[in-house]
Amino acid sequence: SPGGAGEGGAGDGGVLLAEARAAAMSAREEVAKRDQQLYALQEALNSIQVALERTQQAVGERESRMTMLQGALDQTQPAMEIARRAIEERDMKIDGFQVLLGALEEAQMEGQKALEDARGLIAARDE
Image (tube, rainbow, N blue to C red):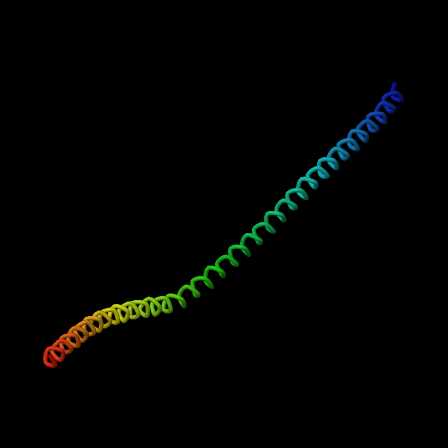
């Protein structure tokens, strides 16, 4: 009957509306899930960005320390060269003093021998 068809048509509209509402709810849930995924990805990206900035800062500090250490090394190299030359000069002076000391000991022995010889001659002359 036409009235039954009309009721069926109205019933179909309710079913379509319920399906549309269910589809909309499902779409909202999907959007919410995607929003959560995007938020999680953004949080991960932020963490990576912070880690990258810290790494860059650490690298910068390390390079700064390396530059400072290289500068200190560059400043100490001339001082070390001066000290090395001073040690070599000191060693040469010590060697020279040892030669001089040996010559003085030899001269002292010769002087002692000459003194003994002179005493012997004086004693022989006095006899």
